Length: 106
Image (cartoon, rainbow, N blue to C red):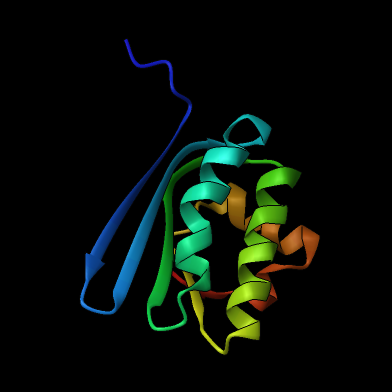
């Protein structure tokens, strides 16, 4: 039985890296998420895309990490794309005012 509530899968194709987030991105998943994303966020030679289609929940810790990734990417002049955002996650990003800083694709 898989009791893990959060998982990350990475798909690389040339200079594009797509990261699929699944489950609950909360305090308990923060360390794993940050550790896996840090090298990707710091690599300005790649096009980084987060696919949130299977993200079921995100708390303030998860949002804080997304903002940190965005800041690192912006400082390096690299983009961060976010796609397939579930409606309930989109609503939260809109309410917090951070959705306008992400390049969000449907």
